[in-house]
Image 1 (tube, rainbow, N blue to C red):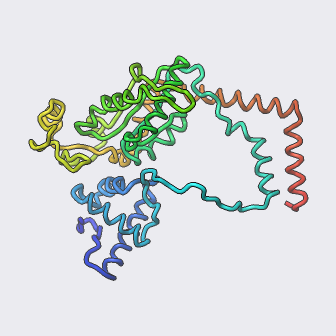
Image 2: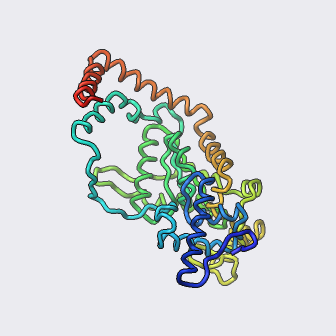
Length: 350
């Protein structure tokens, strides 16, 4: 660890190491206040490198230390964002209020149910968009924007799951049946395979073109699907001073830059080595340039939806609210619900 910049590496064993881990965790918590979102252990490496607290050759060590701090309770176990895992189902939590108070909540909800009603956001639109990203940090980063534009987003780690692919392919098929043009936005690593991801995404979808669902729905042919890889690209990396990793080691631990790798002599690898060299930029690096990354994502979305998309979506919401308000007034439901809430408050002296 780079002691000259004041970051201590926990060494040895026993009490001294635990004390050092505690100090390391306190430093992370302090830095975390300026980050503003929960990120993965790998994302933390990019943050610390951006603050010049570590060097890029210390990433693996820092990931280990962060997980060790979580294990011993120096950091909360949910301090970092992780991929969705197989959780328990059937877990029930008792309500924190009595039955009448619970009913009051539902009565109040009926007065504001228009805010929860989901209209067909894509009715009258030209495009239907979904997004996949390479790392959980990108999902965390882009999810608020995707929610604004009502765009489903997922991490690409689940491509091996046939059901996951089938589910988002089904949404594309349903959208195309309504006359919409479908777009899959993708953001991932800048490396030889990451730059040709569109080929893999389309082939993964095409594999499921002949499936059938239990309800009789058919599969999806992606021949008309627009796949748009909007990042991570060289110009963005350079403009935002993102960190290059000086190797082309893949997820399997093998090095594409080595002549012994079976893909080393393929044209796409050779082109990359000629143009970029033996280096890559991981998608997690985007968390360092948060504002620029959000702009990159918004530009990718608005390239299809236009810069007035949010106004169109708001008009759909306003239509729902007006319809419900008209009905509450005509039927007297609004007054009856308010009277019931007032009665509950009166009986309870609130």
